[in-house]
Image (spheres, rainbow, N blue to C red):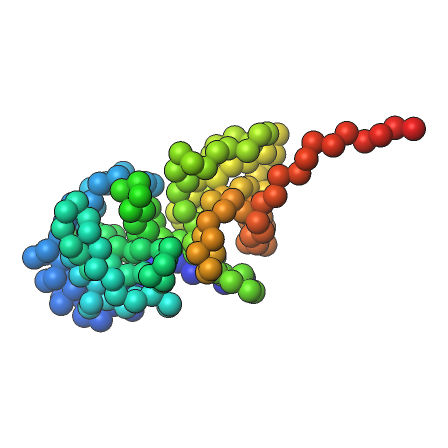
Amino acid sequence: IEVISDESKQDEAKSEEDILATFELDGIEASNVFGIDSKLYIWSSVQKLTLPSGFVDKQVMYNSEEIGGATNSEDNGIILLYLSDDSGENAGYYVFDEKNDSLHPYVTVKSASESFTFLWPNESVTVPDGYFETFHTYDEVQIPAWMPEGSDGDVYLVYAQNDSGEKAVYQYIPKDKSLQRFIKQPNIQPVLG
């Protein structure tokens, strides 16, 4: 399994001076950014940036302004916007949830068969019985997760989207960085004879 973080991708950007000039002229203040305590700004264009693999340019409406973003699919794809602080530092891609008008860090996990992007769950995603809400630190980013009551942190549930655009709750095992779709098992009592 290969861990892909946005931090390595931002180093691939073309010319730092050109990029900062674009930001300084066109930054838009971001709101509803999960997992970040400081003020961030959305860059109005990603044309001078290296897009993550599989993503293409896409114009996006954000707070009634059209800005440049990226998507991996026109149908139900992940939308990325590029954010930084007011000096153009601490920059990276963030997932834009249009429905909930929110942003969260773009963090992916690549397994042998497909890639997954961690998502921040909204009110439609419920905590399964026997689990409590927590955060798991993954590649230096706090990811919302659920942990079984009484667990020692060897298994978490996370909300993610696969390469096919399917959003679901997945069982995540940090030790080997594996993801598997979570299927709630029925509460069956053994029959004693």
